[in-house]
Image (cartoon, rainbow, N blue to C red; front, side, top):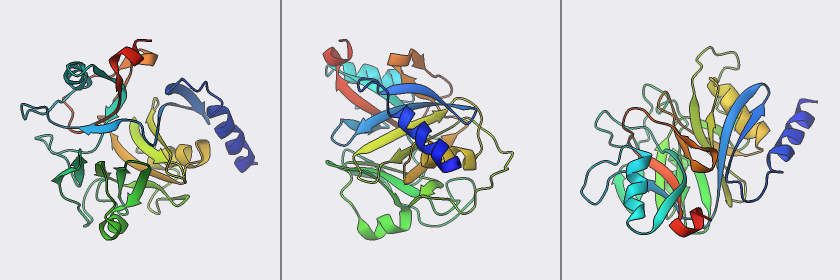
Length: 248
């Protein structure tokens, strides 16, 4: 019965109008906002501007894009970062590797192995477990390493506890089996990691999903009238479109 309910919920989620990139949804009495991108979209990571300074906010990224007649269609925080806002783990922007892949375990969610890499290639979007990524070395135009993996080949991360009382506003990304769709999710109510993984796997039907962060999770979704604010961010991930297209 649970599988039937999950399948119905997933079908309802994807019955949204095609033009709606971001939407709000309820799943098993929890609230989420989702934004979708397709392979081939202009999906990018942002860290520093031409002046070498960290952007730190959605507004700063959008202002820089406006000088090139571009704008953010949606964006969210794009990876964990150190106090100086430098990325934790692999970070590739525009083909330039700015931080190296980390394969060791460690404290915190990032070190809760297996963790993984979200990789944006020219024709597909993938989430690859970090050690497998080190072997495969895919040609990522943009990539960010984070952890833990939420869903791994359709299975939950082995360390997750269904009844955990560690509840936060969290964000993450999942990809479809064919690598043609990425779904970015932020919880609008506090969830534990097991519940968050459940939404990706059973609510959205995605076989691979990666945790991005909690506590600092933020979303920019102008079509929903949403622009979360707070302390300065490190990496930011967003979909870029022509400014005149966004205004239509």
